[in-house]
Length: 482
Image (cartoon, rainbow, N blue to C red; front, side, top):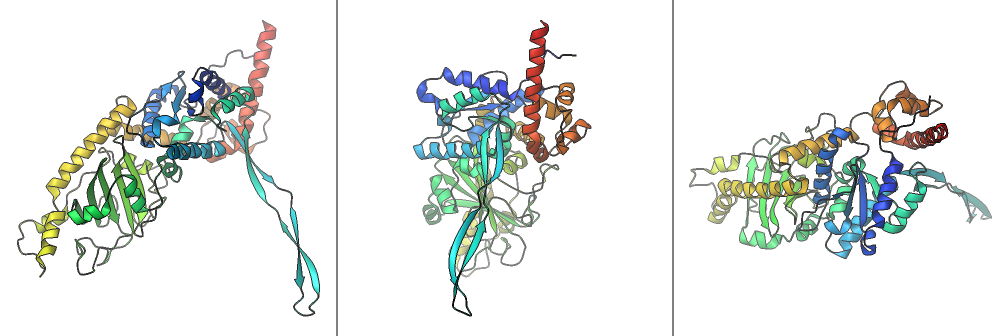
């Protein structure tokens, strides 16, 4: 029986919509235009996903303005790279980060590993015994990954979109983009987070030497952090954009790595830590996060001996910026705490040091009332920015929705119903279109079993091509019958 209606949106539909939309933009705006599609997301969750995408784009921004994306169709979102960058070098870095995602995208592109021609390298070598010269041949088989446009996504429209935007993949899926752009290293590339801690502070306008000279910071020591289950030091300083916070954490606890035993640096003795997690207000009021080790080098993740991400039981437990930070720190980015060092110092007029400046510095630094006031102000700044970036969400709502959308794509298995939606068919049509497959992953789906996201991505091209061919046959049959 011929099927004449396709009630779901297809990848080709979205490419055609983007190609049509970019034509009506001013010529000077086309090269900065990029598109995200919500078609593969449950229709009941698309509005919420759009809000999360608005937040995600703005959290990658270096602009002071909060800029929402534009909903072109019920499933297609457009934005401009210019909305989230200020300088030309930032634009270039943002565009390059996007192209990396397009290069590895499995939903609109076909990525293939090809074997290059073996190169024979001849070299003359002397025999160590006879001194005679002989030739050796070194074979160096090399492989290269090639990314091409997916044939299921309307190649004519794809070519038009590529020509207008100068991008190899101006259209990506919103869920794919979210997962990639909120994890390292892609997050660092989009947000332009430098490689060193000092450069990171400089990018925020923070003068570390001036802060140290003026004693213009404050901190807290925790006997037992609820995040790391170990002692932790929290340090705050005020930058021109807002508060800048770091948490200094340890892999193991001993006298050197206990902040309570070394509350300040004195007589050459300092608290030793292994990793610092940074929260800093970006120009638009959203949090910029980063990880640096004690040597000041940027890190992609927190060693699991330091801390684990328990905010999503479906995840792998590895702490990474920015996704771990936001879904865990639901209290507008800064979790509440009580400073144990202030408790120890409270009421003591005689601290055990022969140097009065050491005593004075400890009293200055561990000032919990002032620190809490600063934190509350920065929380409110962030909360206001979240409302604007999401068109109405509170920070705790954003954290929950961000975690849910991330979980759906990154952690949860792909069901047959979801696979059908992603290639633009209903489940009955999916079974008909893929009936002749020999792909083991697709065969599992046809047996009503779920598969891992990575498995589905490796089979997506075959499924999408078969789905597109199926649609063309059914459409042709329907026309002929009419």
